[in-house]
Length: 211
Image (cartoon, rainbow, N blue to C red; front, top):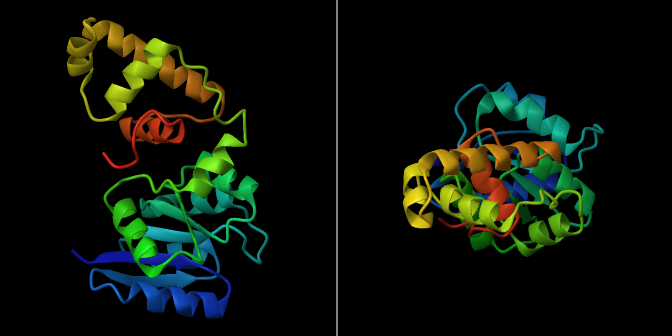
């Protein structure tokens, strides 16, 4: 399968360089690009991944742009120089699937695109450092049992399977998951779907980004 991606970047030289880098991989093609999120949304075709520069000349922020890109239904990777952790945290809160540095090696950038296309979190050291520096972001205050339930459930186990592993009833597991979701929502990290719970578990170091 060819991974079709969009790029939002307002520096022409960086855009051309990124396109050239990604086109070195036979399975990746840039099919849409623009200096704003709206320009890529207007492309209208299906995209598997979007690379989003977090600092754009039009003054828009990561959260605003990620919301604008939502109709595409594609995972969004923060594509950044990494010197502004607050923008990385904003992107994470808004639902970005991770980040890569513009200075990363070709193979790392291509691998990040492939992982995002598979629905994985692209968690780098920069990503983790930015989140860890925001104490409110990581303070969902899960109990040890809730952390245990989340690590299993987010890794792909069903509520029934988690119940069997922990010698609890499925109803108890469902109650735990409900409380976990409520705690994340309370700190502005809502996780309404199982994919969202996987993201939160990765962000908090409970599961590996590679399932």
